[in-house]
Image (cartoon, rainbow, N blue to C red; front, side):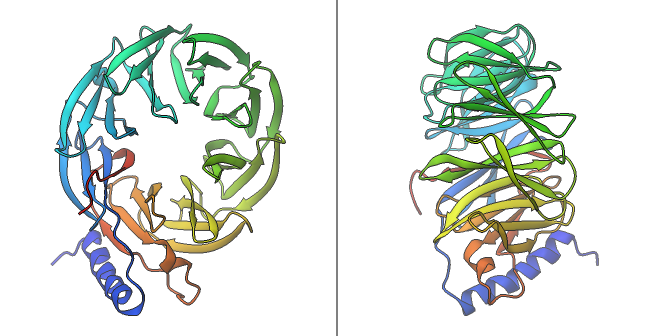
Length: 380
Protein backbone atom coordinates (compact mmCIF):
# COMPACT_ATOMS: atom_id res chain seq x y z
CA UNK A 1 0.00 0.00 0.00
CA UNK A 2 1.33 3.44 -0.95
CA UNK A 3 0.95 6.06 1.77
CA UNK A 4 0.89 9.66 0.60
CA UNK A 5 2.98 12.40 2.17
CA UNK A 6 -0.24 14.12 3.25
CA UNK A 7 -1.39 10.98 5.08
CA UNK A 8 1.95 10.69 6.84
CA UNK A 9 1.73 14.32 7.87
CA UNK A 10 -1.83 13.82 9.07
CA UNK A 11 -0.83 10.90 11.30
CA UNK A 12 2.04 12.90 12.78
CA UNK A 13 -0.29 15.83 13.30
CA UNK A 14 -2.85 13.62 15.05
CA UNK A 15 -0.22 12.62 17.58
CA UNK A 16 0.78 16.24 18.07
CA UNK A 17 -2.88 17.20 18.53
CA UNK A 18 -3.34 14.57 21.26
CA UNK A 19 -0.22 15.88 22.98
CA UNK A 20 -1.61 19.41 22.69
CA UNK A 21 -4.85 18.33 24.35
CA UNK A 22 -3.24 16.33 27.14
CA UNK A 23 -0.17 18.37 27.91
CA UNK A 24 -1.23 22.04 27.95
CA UNK A 25 -4.09 24.49 27.78
CA UNK A 26 -6.19 24.15 24.64
CA UNK A 27 -5.94 26.96 22.12
CA UNK A 28 -9.02 29.09 21.62
CA UNK A 29 -10.93 28.58 18.37
CA UNK A 30 -10.78 31.28 15.73
CA UNK A 31 -14.05 31.72 13.85
CA UNK A 32 -13.19 32.69 10.33
CA UNK A 33 -12.49 31.49 6.81
CA UNK A 34 -9.38 31.07 4.73
CA UNK A 35 -9.87 31.85 1.04
CA UNK A 36 -7.17 30.68 -1.37
CA UNK A 37 -7.04 31.61 -5.05
CA UNK A 38 -6.26 28.31 -6.75
CA UNK A 39 -5.05 28.60 -10.35
CA UNK A 40 -4.93 24.80 -10.57
CA UNK A 41 -8.65 24.52 -9.90
CA UNK A 42 -9.80 27.86 -11.39
CA UNK A 43 -11.58 28.41 -8.11
CA UNK A 44 -11.39 29.84 -4.63
CA UNK A 45 -10.81 27.11 -2.06
CA UNK A 46 -12.45 27.84 1.30
CA UNK A 47 -11.37 26.42 4.66
CA UNK A 48 -13.06 26.72 8.05
CA UNK A 49 -10.46 28.01 10.52
CA UNK A 50 -12.48 27.01 13.57
CA UNK A 51 -11.56 23.37 12.90
CA UNK A 52 -8.98 23.70 10.08
CA UNK A 53 -10.62 21.87 7.21
CA UNK A 54 -11.52 22.64 3.63
CA UNK A 55 -15.26 23.05 3.32
CA UNK A 56 -15.92 24.04 -0.30
CA UNK A 57 -14.61 25.64 -3.46
CA UNK A 58 -16.11 28.47 -5.46
CA UNK A 59 -15.70 27.93 -9.23
CA UNK A 60 -14.65 30.96 -11.27
CA UNK A 61 -14.82 31.48 -15.05
CA UNK A 62 -11.03 31.94 -15.25
CA UNK A 63 -8.02 31.27 -13.03
CA UNK A 64 -7.86 33.76 -10.14
CA UNK A 65 -4.71 35.77 -9.40
CA UNK A 66 -5.63 37.61 -6.19
CA UNK A 67 -8.18 37.19 -3.42
CA UNK A 68 -8.59 40.11 -1.04
CA UNK A 69 -10.89 41.81 1.45
CA UNK A 70 -12.38 45.30 1.32
CA UNK A 71 -14.18 45.77 4.62
CA UNK A 72 -16.56 42.84 5.04
CA UNK A 73 -16.57 42.07 1.31
CA UNK A 74 -14.41 39.49 -0.46
CA UNK A 75 -13.16 39.86 -4.04
CA UNK A 76 -11.17 37.77 -6.50
CA UNK A 77 -9.44 39.05 -9.62
CA UNK A 78 -9.30 37.06 -12.86
CA UNK A 79 -6.78 38.86 -15.13
CA UNK A 80 -7.53 36.90 -18.30
CA UNK A 81 -11.26 37.38 -17.82
CA UNK A 82 -10.77 41.14 -17.36
CA UNK A 83 -12.95 41.00 -14.27
CA UNK A 84 -13.11 41.12 -10.50
CA UNK A 85 -15.76 38.98 -8.81
CA UNK A 86 -17.37 39.77 -5.48
CA UNK A 87 -17.83 36.68 -3.31
CA UNK A 88 -20.55 36.36 -0.68
CA UNK A 89 -18.64 35.15 2.43
CA UNK A 90 -21.78 33.53 3.87
CA UNK A 91 -23.22 31.63 0.91
CA UNK A 92 -19.83 31.12 -0.86
CA UNK A 93 -21.29 32.22 -4.18
CA UNK A 94 -20.41 34.89 -6.71
CA UNK A 95 -22.37 37.99 -5.71
CA UNK A 96 -21.37 40.30 -8.54
CA UNK A 97 -18.89 41.17 -11.28
CA UNK A 98 -16.83 44.25 -12.15
CA UNK A 99 -15.71 44.23 -15.79
CA UNK A 100 -12.71 46.10 -17.20
CA UNK A 101 -11.68 46.95 -20.78
CA UNK A 102 -8.33 45.14 -20.60
CA UNK A 103 -6.29 42.53 -18.79
CA UNK A 104 -5.85 43.21 -15.06
CA UNK A 105 -2.22 43.74 -14.03
CA UNK A 106 -2.85 43.98 -10.29
CA UNK A 107 -5.16 45.17 -7.51
CA UNK A 108 -4.69 46.90 -4.16
CA UNK A 109 -7.13 48.00 -1.44
CA UNK A 110 -6.84 51.31 0.42
CA UNK A 111 -6.13 50.76 4.14
CA UNK A 112 -9.48 52.38 5.02
CA UNK A 113 -11.26 49.98 2.61
CA UNK A 114 -12.83 52.91 0.75
CA UNK A 115 -11.47 52.04 -2.70
CA UNK A 116 -10.06 49.20 -4.74
CA UNK A 117 -7.30 50.31 -7.13
CA UNK A 118 -7.14 48.19 -10.28
CA UNK A 119 -4.33 48.38 -12.85
CA UNK A 120 -5.42 47.58 -16.40
CA UNK A 121 -2.91 46.91 -19.17
CA UNK A 122 -4.74 47.91 -22.38
CA UNK A 123 -5.73 50.66 -22.48
CA UNK A 124 -3.21 51.42 -19.73
CA UNK A 125 -5.06 52.94 -16.79
CA UNK A 126 -5.64 52.90 -13.05
CA UNK A 127 -9.31 52.34 -12.18
CA UNK A 128 -10.70 53.26 -8.76
CA UNK A 129 -13.64 51.11 -7.64
CA UNK A 130 -16.14 51.68 -4.83
CA UNK A 131 -16.39 48.21 -3.19
CA UNK A 132 -19.85 48.95 -1.75
CA UNK A 133 -21.46 49.64 -5.13
CA UNK A 134 -18.97 47.80 -7.38
CA UNK A 135 -18.85 50.93 -9.54
CA UNK A 136 -15.75 52.44 -11.14
CA UNK A 137 -15.57 55.97 -9.70
CA UNK A 138 -12.48 57.18 -11.58
CA UNK A 139 -10.25 56.18 -14.46
CA UNK A 140 -6.70 57.58 -14.61
CA UNK A 141 -4.92 57.14 -17.94
CA UNK A 142 -1.29 55.97 -17.75
CA UNK A 143 1.53 56.58 -20.22
CA UNK A 144 2.67 52.94 -20.33
CA UNK A 145 1.63 49.43 -19.36
CA UNK A 146 1.53 49.28 -15.54
CA UNK A 147 3.51 46.82 -13.46
CA UNK A 148 3.43 47.13 -9.64
CA UNK A 149 1.16 49.09 -7.30
CA UNK A 150 1.14 49.97 -3.60
CA UNK A 151 -0.90 52.64 -1.90
CA UNK A 152 -2.15 54.52 1.13
CA UNK A 153 -5.57 56.12 1.52
CA UNK A 154 -4.44 59.19 -0.43
CA UNK A 155 -1.62 58.26 -2.81
CA UNK A 156 -0.66 55.32 -5.02
CA UNK A 157 2.84 54.44 -6.21
CA UNK A 158 3.12 52.65 -9.55
CA UNK A 159 5.85 51.17 -11.68
CA UNK A 160 5.56 50.58 -15.41
CA UNK A 161 6.32 47.20 -16.97
CA UNK A 162 9.93 47.27 -18.16
CA UNK A 163 10.32 50.93 -17.13
CA UNK A 164 12.67 52.64 -14.66
CA UNK A 165 10.36 55.25 -13.16
CA UNK A 166 7.98 55.42 -10.20
CA UNK A 167 4.71 57.23 -10.85
CA UNK A 168 2.72 58.90 -8.08
CA UNK A 169 -1.07 59.17 -8.32
CA UNK A 170 -3.28 61.23 -6.03
CA UNK A 171 -6.29 59.17 -5.00
CA UNK A 172 -7.99 62.37 -3.81
CA UNK A 173 -7.88 64.24 -7.12
CA UNK A 174 -7.62 61.05 -9.24
CA UNK A 175 -4.67 62.48 -11.19
CA UNK A 176 -1.06 61.58 -11.89
CA UNK A 177 1.05 64.01 -9.81
CA UNK A 178 4.54 63.09 -10.98
CA UNK A 179 7.15 60.50 -11.94
CA UNK A 180 10.65 59.85 -10.61
CA UNK A 181 13.49 58.21 -12.51
CA UNK A 182 15.19 55.64 -10.25
CA UNK A 183 17.65 54.09 -12.70
CA UNK A 184 16.41 50.51 -12.46
CA UNK A 185 13.33 48.41 -13.08
CA UNK A 186 11.50 48.06 -9.72
CA UNK A 187 10.87 44.51 -8.57
CA UNK A 188 9.16 45.40 -5.30
CA UNK A 189 7.35 48.56 -4.18
CA UNK A 190 5.92 49.83 -0.88
CA UNK A 191 4.57 53.13 0.44
CA UNK A 192 5.25 54.08 4.08
CA UNK A 193 2.42 56.46 4.99
CA UNK A 194 3.84 57.92 8.22
CA UNK A 195 7.33 58.45 6.78
CA UNK A 196 5.83 59.90 3.57
CA UNK A 197 8.14 57.72 1.53
CA UNK A 198 7.99 55.27 -1.36
CA UNK A 199 10.50 52.41 -1.12
CA UNK A 200 11.43 50.57 -4.30
CA UNK A 201 13.75 47.60 -4.69
CA UNK A 202 15.70 46.90 -7.87
CA UNK A 203 14.85 43.77 -9.83
CA UNK A 204 18.43 43.17 -11.02
CA UNK A 205 20.80 44.45 -8.32
CA UNK A 206 21.22 44.91 -4.58
CA UNK A 207 19.65 48.33 -4.14
CA UNK A 208 16.67 50.09 -2.59
CA UNK A 209 15.72 53.73 -3.23
CA UNK A 210 13.52 56.01 -1.13
CA UNK A 211 11.34 58.61 -2.86
CA UNK A 212 9.27 61.38 -1.26
CA UNK A 213 5.54 60.82 -1.75
CA UNK A 214 4.98 64.60 -1.57
CA UNK A 215 7.62 65.98 -3.96
CA UNK A 216 8.83 62.90 -5.83
CA UNK A 217 12.42 63.72 -4.89
CA UNK A 218 14.80 60.77 -4.70
CA UNK A 219 15.97 60.80 -1.08
CA UNK A 220 18.54 58.00 -0.83
CA UNK A 221 20.00 54.87 -2.39
CA UNK A 222 20.52 51.95 -0.02
CA UNK A 223 22.98 49.23 -1.08
CA UNK A 224 22.15 45.61 -0.20
CA UNK A 225 24.14 42.38 -0.31
CA UNK A 226 21.35 40.75 -2.37
CA UNK A 227 18.61 41.62 -4.86
CA UNK A 228 15.47 42.60 -2.88
CA UNK A 229 12.26 40.74 -3.63
CA UNK A 230 9.85 41.26 -0.70
CA UNK A 231 9.28 44.00 1.91
CA UNK A 232 7.51 43.76 5.28
CA UNK A 233 7.07 46.55 7.86
CA UNK A 234 6.84 46.01 11.60
CA UNK A 235 3.64 47.26 13.23
CA UNK A 236 3.69 49.87 16.00
CA UNK A 237 0.34 50.71 17.66
CA UNK A 238 -1.54 49.73 14.53
CA UNK A 239 0.71 51.73 12.19
CA UNK A 240 3.63 50.73 10.00
CA UNK A 241 6.69 51.11 12.20
CA UNK A 242 10.29 52.17 11.82
CA UNK A 243 11.69 48.84 10.65
CA UNK A 244 11.36 47.27 7.21
CA UNK A 245 12.43 43.67 6.68
CA UNK A 246 13.70 42.67 3.26
CA UNK A 247 14.17 39.21 1.74
CA UNK A 248 15.70 38.49 -1.64
CA UNK A 249 15.36 36.25 -4.64
CA UNK A 250 18.28 34.11 -3.37
CA UNK A 251 20.60 33.79 -0.40
CA UNK A 252 19.92 33.29 3.30
CA UNK A 253 19.84 36.87 4.59
CA UNK A 254 17.25 39.35 5.81
CA UNK A 255 18.09 43.05 5.69
CA UNK A 256 16.59 45.34 8.34
CA UNK A 257 16.13 48.89 7.07
CA UNK A 258 15.01 52.12 8.74
CA UNK A 259 12.65 54.05 6.43
CA UNK A 260 12.86 57.20 8.57
CA UNK A 261 16.66 57.32 8.49
CA UNK A 262 16.87 55.84 4.98
CA UNK A 263 19.55 53.37 5.99
CA UNK A 264 20.22 49.64 6.26
CA UNK A 265 20.64 48.93 9.97
CA UNK A 266 21.59 45.28 10.02
CA UNK A 267 21.65 42.05 8.04
CA UNK A 268 20.78 38.78 9.79
CA UNK A 269 20.59 35.13 8.76
CA UNK A 270 16.95 34.33 8.05
CA UNK A 271 17.14 30.56 7.59
CA UNK A 272 17.47 28.81 4.22
CA UNK A 273 16.34 31.09 1.36
CA UNK A 274 13.96 33.34 3.37
CA UNK A 275 10.84 34.08 1.34
CA UNK A 276 7.44 35.40 2.53
CA UNK A 277 7.07 37.37 5.75
CA UNK A 278 4.40 38.44 8.24
CA UNK A 279 4.52 40.34 11.53
CA UNK A 280 2.36 39.94 14.61
CA UNK A 281 2.29 40.28 18.39
CA UNK A 282 1.88 37.36 20.80
CA UNK A 283 1.81 38.25 24.47
CA UNK A 284 4.62 40.74 25.01
CA UNK A 285 6.59 39.59 21.96
CA UNK A 286 6.64 41.28 18.56
CA UNK A 287 7.39 38.55 16.04
CA UNK A 288 8.55 38.26 12.45
CA UNK A 289 7.48 35.08 10.66
CA UNK A 290 9.61 33.99 7.69
CA UNK A 291 9.08 30.98 5.42
CA UNK A 292 12.14 29.05 4.22
CA UNK A 293 11.48 27.12 0.98
CA UNK A 294 15.10 25.93 0.92
CA UNK A 295 14.67 23.89 4.11
CA UNK A 296 10.89 23.55 4.41
CA UNK A 297 10.79 25.55 7.64
CA UNK A 298 9.00 28.47 9.26
CA UNK A 299 11.43 30.70 11.19
CA UNK A 300 10.10 33.01 13.89
CA UNK A 301 12.20 35.96 15.04
CA UNK A 302 11.80 38.25 18.04
CA UNK A 303 11.71 41.72 16.45
CA UNK A 304 12.97 43.52 19.56
CA UNK A 305 16.02 41.29 20.10
CA UNK A 306 16.36 40.29 16.42
CA UNK A 307 17.07 36.74 17.58
CA UNK A 308 15.52 33.47 16.41
CA UNK A 309 12.65 32.59 18.76
CA UNK A 310 11.61 29.29 17.16
CA UNK A 311 11.87 27.21 14.00
CA UNK A 312 9.19 24.77 12.83
CA UNK A 313 9.71 22.19 10.10
CA UNK A 314 6.80 22.49 7.66
CA UNK A 315 8.04 20.32 4.82
CA UNK A 316 7.43 20.82 1.12
CA UNK A 317 7.90 24.30 -0.32
CA UNK A 318 6.42 26.80 2.13
CA UNK A 319 5.26 30.07 0.59
CA UNK A 320 2.86 32.66 1.95
CA UNK A 321 2.37 32.91 5.72
CA UNK A 322 -0.77 34.41 7.29
CA UNK A 323 -1.60 35.05 10.95
CA UNK A 324 -5.04 34.71 12.50
CA UNK A 325 -6.12 38.06 14.03
CA UNK A 326 -6.13 36.57 17.54
CA UNK A 327 -2.40 35.82 17.24
CA UNK A 328 -2.90 32.13 18.08
CA UNK A 329 -2.00 30.53 14.75
CA UNK A 330 0.36 30.94 11.80
CA UNK A 331 -0.88 29.46 8.52
CA UNK A 332 1.76 28.48 5.96
CA UNK A 333 0.64 27.75 2.39
CA UNK A 334 2.61 25.25 0.31
CA UNK A 335 3.53 26.97 -2.96
CA UNK A 336 2.73 23.92 -5.09
CA UNK A 337 0.07 21.73 -3.47
CA UNK A 338 -1.82 24.41 -1.56
CA UNK A 339 -1.66 22.33 1.63
CA UNK A 340 -1.83 24.62 4.68
CA UNK A 341 0.34 23.87 7.70
CA UNK A 342 -1.01 25.27 10.96
CA UNK A 343 1.39 26.35 13.70
CA UNK A 344 0.10 27.12 17.18
CA UNK A 345 2.34 30.03 18.13
CA UNK A 346 2.40 29.62 21.94
CA UNK A 347 3.32 25.95 21.60
CA UNK A 348 6.35 26.53 19.38
CA UNK A 349 7.53 29.48 21.48
CA UNK A 350 7.51 27.33 24.63
CA UNK A 351 11.19 26.72 25.36
CA UNK A 352 10.31 23.46 27.14
CA UNK A 353 9.40 21.91 23.79
CA UNK A 354 12.58 20.67 22.15
CA UNK A 355 10.55 19.45 19.16
CA UNK A 356 8.36 22.14 17.59
CA UNK A 357 5.25 20.29 16.37
CA UNK A 358 2.76 21.32 13.72
CA UNK A 359 -0.76 21.74 15.05
CA UNK A 360 -2.36 20.30 11.93
CA UNK A 361 -2.21 20.21 8.10
CA UNK A 362 -5.13 20.45 5.68
CA UNK A 363 -5.47 20.64 1.88
CA UNK A 364 -6.92 23.58 -0.07
CA UNK A 365 -6.30 24.16 -3.80
CA UNK A 366 -3.38 23.41 -6.11
CA UNK A 367 -1.11 26.15 -7.46
CA UNK A 368 -2.17 28.81 -4.92
CA UNK A 369 -1.75 32.43 -6.05
CA UNK A 370 -3.02 34.40 -3.08
CA UNK A 371 -4.75 33.91 0.26
CA UNK A 372 -6.88 35.95 2.66
CA UNK A 373 -8.36 35.40 6.13
CA UNK A 374 -11.97 36.55 6.48
CA UNK A 375 -13.59 36.75 9.95
CA UNK A 376 -16.86 34.87 10.20
CA UNK A 377 -19.87 37.20 10.36
CA UNK A 378 -21.37 34.92 12.98
CA UNK A 379 -19.28 32.83 15.39
CA UNK A 380 -20.08 29.15 15.75
